[in-house]
Each structure stands twice: as structure tokens, then as C-alpha cells.
Length: 77
Image (cartoon, rainbow, N blue to C red; front, side):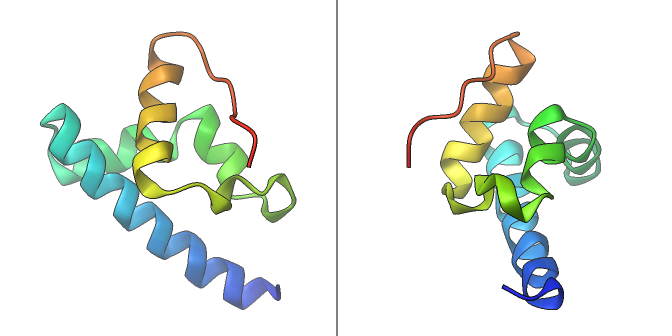
């Protein structure tokens, strides 16, 4: 995947995950975006080679909440 395509995909995934976090945690859009983009999970997501972008937005939101609880384990794809 070229860099521009990945950036577009990352933007879309991030928007979907933020929406899920709003629904699940009741946070504002700004708070959800800030917390997600500062997470360890997001640092993996923004690297194409990790393949974290293959997970659904719901799974990514759940993984984010797992990370907040102190446990971030990536499931097999």
C-alpha cells in the first residue's frame, strides 16, 4: 500500500474508532480523539507494517479499553 493510501485508511479508521469510544465510554469527540491518539495502540496502528489496521473499529476500541486497564494483547488475524 502506498503512503497516501495508508494515510487515508488511517484517517478513516481513527474516525470510526473515535466514534466507537464516544458510544462506549460516553466521552466527547475531542476527549476520545486525544486519548486514542496518545495511546500505545495508536502508535502501533499508525505503522502499516504492524497490520493493526486490519482490525475492526469495534475491536480497536475494545483493545484501547483493554490498554487502559493495563492489558494490551493483539488477537491473531
